[in-house]
Length: 230
Ligand code: OAD
Image (cartoon, rainbow, N blue to C red; front, top):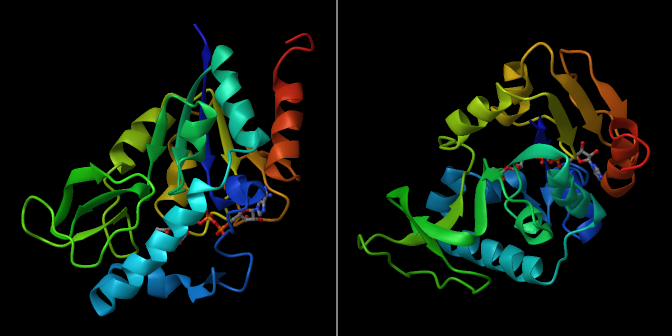
């Protein structure tokens, strides 16, 4: 049986694909304060601006490509049972070929009703028009888990973490909960790894930190973990 590799990815893995991280530029995300464009309060304050903001992110995503880090993770499925738990709302893991991807914070290419996330619509890369309504008659909104909202995929993510042999934390500052605490659910025998060029919030378990950008770090990780000839 293949060993299980559970990956917790964050914005840093997509940085080399041209998508900016959240906290590397003074708390500004594409010139907006994260709190303004990533909270449910922001939506109620100015849904039109939020619709425009996520339209821009979606349009940008269409022209970004997965980088070598996404591709190595997809290729690792030959050797490991790989489950990716991502905080990212982009689809670069899927486009690189990863089969098991759990999106904790939603997905840019989807929309849902303002009244709940039960009905989710694929919208691809198209711009949403403010005022569009779903089947329940409520306003459609981006399918994003904003600050102040539940994280519906949390239970599934915890379950996957509980059976990990390796946990690889890549490109996340570990500032946002509950994602940042998921590694606590990994069994004692699991080996913990981190790939990040910078310091993150401290991890309360022994961990091997590869201080490199995602693409270089994934190459190093693969060389460390897989036997020479693979
Ligand atoms: P952050 O912006 O907080 O952290 C990005 C991490 O990536 C930092 O630790 C950087 O050092 C690292 N980094 C930068 N460039 C990198 C590279 N080329 N390769 C590898 N690592 C690199 O982003 P997240 O931790 O993902 O939530 O943020 C978590 C959540 O906060 C997001 O999902 C988002 C945000 O608010 C929502 O929108 C709900």
